[in-house]
Image (cartoon, rainbow, N blue to C red):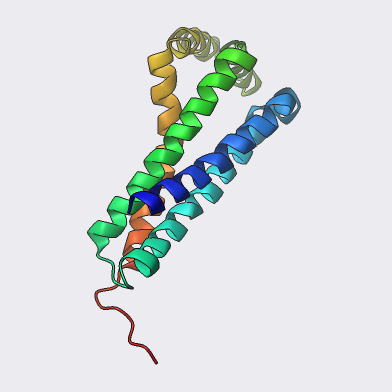
Length: 175
């Protein structure tokens, strides 16, 4: 199980890390809305490795049999490895290449509130929320937690679906 989990977890992690690193030079041109779409699309694509990892485990290690529990264990470990790769990459990107990300994101939050023709109170609340976000996001522990929560739920859903779809009580009979 260890080899399967490491292989597919690292492939999944490499996909999200590579895409993140590839988009850093274009972050200002892409913008936050398109960046979010691109980021989550990449996360979902990397989550496909969970399905393929569970299937590989079933076919190559478990002789064609797989319980939901074992499939879940394999999938959640792949998701954890992928999530850790994502978080580690973001921490490097944020603190080394994009230290102004929190400032730009906070300014974007305020601009969105102003563009929505919100009341002065809502704009003031958005400004306070943006300042609070900047302060919290510069704390590495908070930054890590938020970044982990971006990717892990997608991996959890992919794990639950894959383990359910790929479970098999008996090995297939040779033809």
